[in-house]
Structures are given as C-alpha cells and as structure tokens.
Image 1 (tube, one colour):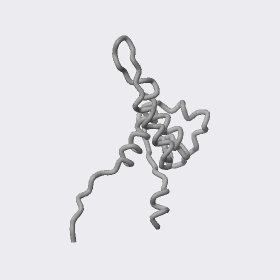
Image 2 (cartoon, rainbow, N blue to C red):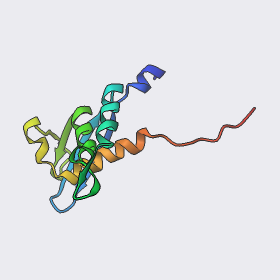
Image 3 (cartoon, rainbow, N blue to C red):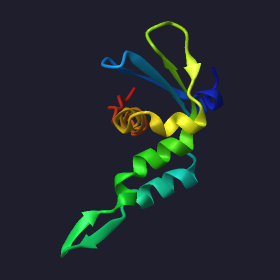
Image 4 (cartoon, one colour):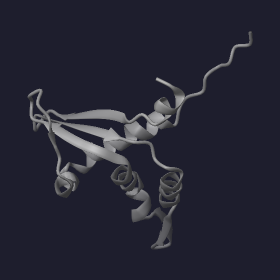
Amino acid sequence: MDLKELLNAHRYYAVKDDDKEITFYFELRDATSTENLEYRRRLSKVAFKNGKLESSADALNAALWLLDKIKVKVEYSNGTAERAEVPDDLFHEIPEMTRFWAINRYLKATEGEEVEIQKN
C-alpha cells in the first residue's frame, strides 16, 4: 500500500451492547480540514448562564456532529456473523453513548502519539 492509500484509508470500529446483544460497526473516513476546523470551533463554544460560563450545546454535541459528517457506513449484527446496514433515518436511534464511543475512538486514534527519534 502506498502513502496516498494509507493516508486515505478508512477506519473501522465495532461497539458491542451486551444488554441488547447487538454490535454496531462504524466505518469512518478522515475529516477534511474544513470539518476539523468546524469541529474545533463548535468544541470551543461557551455560553454564559446564571452568571457562570458553561459549555454550549454545540460544544457538548461537537463530537456527534463530526461523526455525522465522517461516517461512511454503519452496520449492525444481532449476535450472528451476518451484518445489515443501519438506514440513515435510523442512525440517530443508535444510543448516544454508543455513537460517542465510536467517535471518541476515532479522535483518540487520529491525535497520534509522540515517538522518540533515534539518530543513526
């Protein structure tokens, strides 16, 4: 796989809900620069309520907004190996915490980690 293919590869995350015996499979693409900037803008919004500074609704929902933008496909399985696609009109019926888990895994994976460089 060349560098261009590696940089444009999709990311895959699976989330299992043991109580309902259902697994959701999220296929996500990388956010564009515009989407990334809008996500960060939404994340930094605050509101002044009752004399206190609080995170705004936009800030609290910024991660879910980004998930809506970068999801390629979402599938589910109810305990079998066979998967079915989640229709767009039912995507928001997936529990919010399940969707948060998927986007948080993506955000953690894309932030990278520091690596020590060794001199030759």
